[in-house]
Image 1: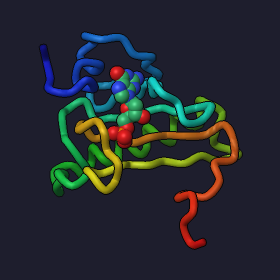
Image 2 (image 1 turned 120 degrees about the vertical axis):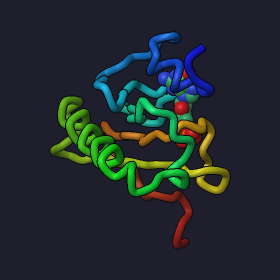
Image 3 (image 1 turned 180 degrees about the horizontal axis):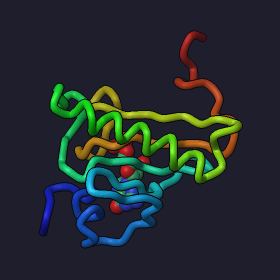
Length: 119
Ligand code: DGP
């Protein structure tokens, strides 16, 4: 087994996923439990557990994740009407899989960022 998380195994091709983009640094694949018509995860191929674990040495990789999300969003037809990106971090952020990932969500109006916030 190549990694400690399910996402590392997806990167390694050990378990199936609907991969929409992959290069030597990042992989983008459809979320198994979509929360919107388009729900794609963009992850670094290298295992970084959470956003709280990144450092200056990761700046280029994090930028590449965002540029990849933007390109994939355009390919999925989301750019004109827009979309949302989310990175959940650790317990209070609701992170379930401890391999850094950016959620790309779109395909319908997504409403308020945090339901109930500000009410
Ligand atoms: P988070 O709560 O931010 O850690 O989101 C984890 C997401 O990962 C969640 O939306 C479901 C998705 N997920 C979990 N296991 C798998 C899997 O085996 N395959 C795919 N494609 N997605 C998964």
